[in-house]
Structures are given as C-alpha cells and as structure tokens.
Length: 190
Image 1: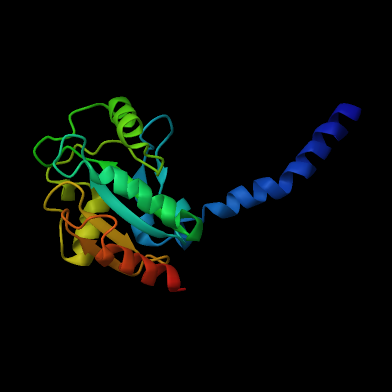
Image 2: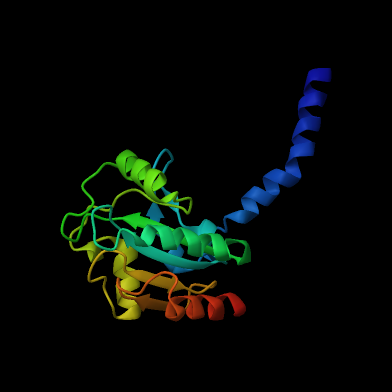
C-alpha cells in the first residue's frame, strides 16, 4: 500500500506539469487549419500536427542545402533568436522540389544546418513532392496567399490565429526591413 501511495503522490506532484504540457498543444478542433497538417521532426520523432505552434507568429520556409539562398539559414537563425521570446517561431521544411538542391537524408540535412549555420529553430522531415504544392501544407499556403513558392527559401508569415498569411519571395532576406516590419506588426497584434 505504501508503494501505491508514493506512486500516487508522485502523480499528484507531476499533475500541474502534465496539465501544462497538455494545454501547450491545443486539440485539432481548436487549432487553425494551417497548423493541422502533420509532419515529423527532421530527426527522431513521430509525425504530429503543427498545432503546438498555434498562438505564435510563424515563419514557414522551404529550405535547401545546395542553393544560392542557403546562406539565409544564418539570418533565419538570427531572426529566430531576436524574436523567439516574443512568441515567434520559424518552421523549416527542407525540400528537394527546386533544382534537386536538397539531395541529402534528414540526418545529413540536420548535420549540415548545425555545422554550418547553428540552426536551432524547428526543422521538419524533407519534402520530396514536386511541385512542392503537392505537399498539403504548402498547397494550403499557396492557395491562401495566391502565391506558390517559385524557389527555395520562399517564406510565409502566419499570424498568431492563423487567419493572416503573407508570402515573401526567396530573394527577401530574413533580416530585411520588409520582413522584420511585417513580423513586428504580427507580434503587436492580438
């Protein structure tokens, strides 16, 4: 009986933390449609919805390791570091859809991003769909903005509630005034 009481007391002590973790990911029914798409993390982990990012301002980017824009990883990380404590997240999706410029495995992509750019923002498993709009998340982003990615490092800025999505072409630098002003506006909105 003492063992059961100790185990029960451990559960009682852990309950607030468990409840907070459960609250962190809203149920799919309360989650905006843009976050209901399922993806697996770049490395270990099972596929899950993106609902855990609902309530944050998100920048969704299709990335590639062998592209003329690959250097944007550095500025994306700087952008993430600048705004992450204010409710901002970058979601990176390596894609092999343009010029086959992402030929590596998920593990190779992770190693490349860490070694060359110190990437710490969330990255997801490589997208093989060509065109990229065959992948459901990017199909919805393209449909809702009227703009499909034309190349790697296309950016979509998503409001906290998922109702506003703004498209930015690959050539728009992560730290540009155009993008940072849009991020600041979304962070100020409630």
